[in-house]
View 1: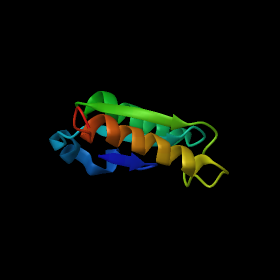
View 2 (view 1 turned 135 degrees about the horizontal axis):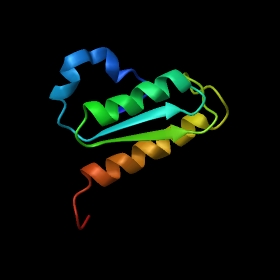
View 3 (view 1 turned 135 degrees about the vertical axis):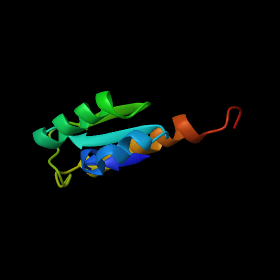
Length: 86
């Protein structure tokens, strides 16, 4: 599962049911959401990573930030979905 600038904390107790590897992508300038995502990673999600896109705000409107999100997501999918030997 990948979340870009999302608020997993709003899922409440249901977040504890997530078993899929999870990547939370957050803008470095989105301090509140970054703090909440880091708390969720420690509290609820079993295999979770928080990736920070420097200088990005909540909507990733800054030049080049969405491209960074794409690279992070691509690499996450390759690492977690690719079959060995392919």
